[in-house]
Length: 141
Image (tube, rainbow, N blue to C red):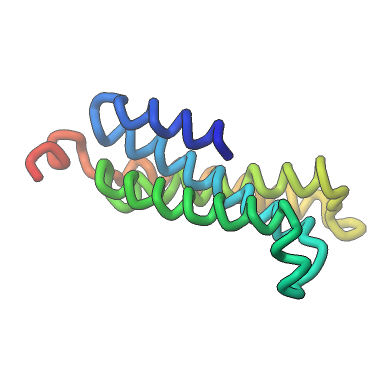
């Protein structure tokens, strides 16, 4: 999570600002993927368990960082330009982390459907970035 925050600090200096918004949106998605991983490995929901569980603390930090980065992305890029990479990265990285670290697997016979859905999410997110406002229009604000 600290690495994501460090990369985000460097990304705020990217020019033009709309490009920085795309990167910050992707980093917000990465933060939300970390939050999802924390929810997957959480040991319990009792207050005493939550206070002692590092995953709960990581979830809180990742959620706050994700919201902050999404807001910063929206300040620099259009809604579509900021949110499309966020959703794409959140979905892709969350799925990969679930499979690699938690042993998640698609239902029997569902691997092809899972891969197809994964490709659709990425294709949709990437195609939406085409509709982001031109950089010149963002500079007028």
